[in-house]
Image 1: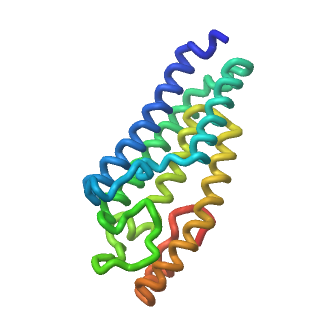
Image 2 (image 1 turned 30 degrees about the horizontal axis):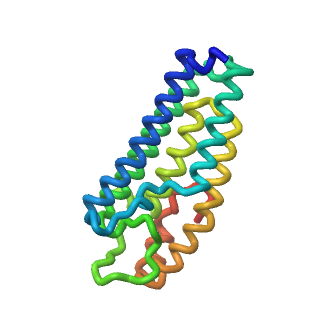
Length: 197
């Protein structure tokens, strides 16, 4: 049981805690800066019951493995690659938010606003959904950083399935809002999430 207080556990778990704290705090702050405090609620922190369950599962896997298979957590190269992936995912997501500005919302718009413009420049020139891509990369990276093999696969599958449903739903409205302009954009630029066109 002393493995829970080892250098490895302290380092990896503190990196995970800081990654989660930074991700959600920065999302909330950016939402306030872009949309104004009166338009932002705690739901802008993007914490749902499913998300909390996933994080509890991840922590349970980590504790089980560090107690019974501590050598599994000692692959520092893998853990450091995971940390780099977390940073890359974070950067991609924040670039998406900053580039889109008011067009970026945490809830899918089902009605076009007068100021709603199709964003195709910056990071959106490389992928249609960099916010989703960034979150996908970030979430899987957190589990690589923890050397959690089961959660790496589980997070990749669950997050991918979520976006496999969300992206077509969102794009239905984007096609309604922007018509041919969006269809042409979608032909040229991939979604940014693997295997989702």
